[in-house]
Image (tube, rainbow, N blue to C red):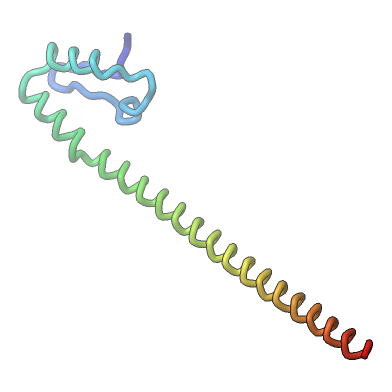
Length: 110
């Protein structure tokens, strides 16, 4: 099974996107890593996965995406508040109009 590894005498890497794919088999990846790589390569790979620039870029992109989602949700919330407030005012006006018309009817029937 190809687990997305790029073999080179000194480099042993996997694409970051492949780590998140459903086809990624962590056990096979780990077994290949410890069998083929030197301690230096394993430590470098660990460092790359934990704090590498690709992880920073992914986190930044996730931050941007979440920030956009938050702004959209905030906008939706404001629209809902405005719509509900508008409907509440309209309902109050309707109740007031009905009450006033009832009072007028009662006074005119006396």
